[in-house]
Length: 130
Image (cartoon, rainbow, N blue to C red):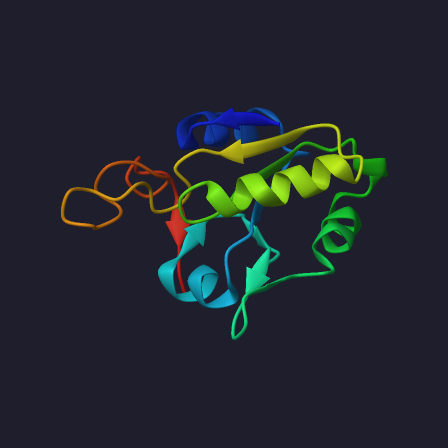
């Protein structure tokens, strides 16, 4: 798996329109915290029990088509869940998987806040929320 910054991910998506950006956070995070413009939501795990989505790989395969050869970029809050989800895709035969480092909200700052050190939003990249 390749690890890329949010800015690198955005540039990659602009240069590779066939690539998919998949947001693996919970539905509540995706809808109410916000998400990158154009991101497709497929939860890696979700409440209320936070169990891993047993259909995650199948859902991504359905979206990607083409036998797992389409580039897949994964994003979560901080880059941890997306890395775990990316490993599951690699084990399932996907060939080109990218983990967006620092995720959508970035690392925690000294006051334990996100969106102030790194991440998609911190970098000023396009995002939206419901």
